[in-house]
Length: 490
Image (cartoon, rainbow, N blue to C red):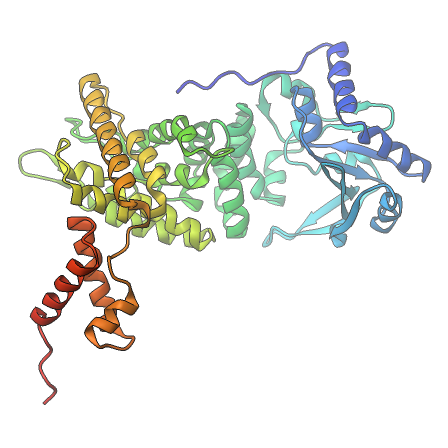
């Protein structure tokens, strides 16, 4: 999928003034807050992402300010103006507040010193806006708008880089990334979010220093990876991770997909295939009916084939197989997502999709029995709609006839699911008898045998559809009478 050229700010001074004036008109609280700080004898400037986005013609709801005021002074200025004020991190100089629909953070100018063995900075408050901007990740985020007065402060050429679509560090990239290795991940994320390119010096420094990312907490890496995947065009950012070696440290299953292809090209490039499946899944996300991008679907699309490197086998007849790569891939997915501290819920959702992504292809060319349809729905559970998206996205063949046949077959499957779902309430499929009824019929108390009986009735319901209580009771008693009984203990 070609990535569209990112929007660029106007290169003229009038264009810049218009963009920044528009920001202030849309968000009048910016100037109002500036006047309050000035009246109290303090400097205030809008910094980072809000300034960058305003110059790109975008306005959000989160606002970051830098100030000469110390945290306790900031609290006094905000009191009586904001709807609510809270302590975000006083030791880092940050006070937060809510003003209408806007979330605002005000941070005292900082000059950070870093322990080489830790990502946590030793915070020292600074005295100048320019010094504060020098410690930011990239020049496009190192611009500020002094308020009141709407004066653009750009000591490191961020506006030129914004026009060029380049991500460059305000100071030498080696020093910047050594101070805070997470900035390397942020570079890949901004490539995906903004459609920019990482400048050669930053790319070279990232490649040389990729192992420094290992001192960063798994949670922070996870958050950057998630933001990258949730961007409009994550493929470019993922490519940066792989090409610089960062992925080998934070998501090694991804570069492992770049399997060495044999001279006869008997299998497709799994790495490129996975990125294409991700893009196609993004195109299909509207089917999910969500308000925005879906992290679970995107992770499942990216990781669906991670079991292939472990399961690749070359047969004597020259064919290549990846037997059980779905099961192996689900195990690898769980292990990696746990290491990255994803929630248990998200981890299980993604792993379930990885494990089920081949299920559709196991039923031939469309001769689906009712029991097969029921089993497909039952195993997918609440991930059924995501499984529809993943399965459709997993078709990357260039053979138009084959692609159309797969699409028609899956259309037929979805139609079958809809018909059975309306008749049998598939999404909440349960046995015809509940646990209490099973215990009453068999004269049992709670225990393992009740669970076995429940699973038997659920399989029966899956195979044959709704039976009714009488038929289910008869089948249960027959199963109970015929089941093997354990030998008595000697």
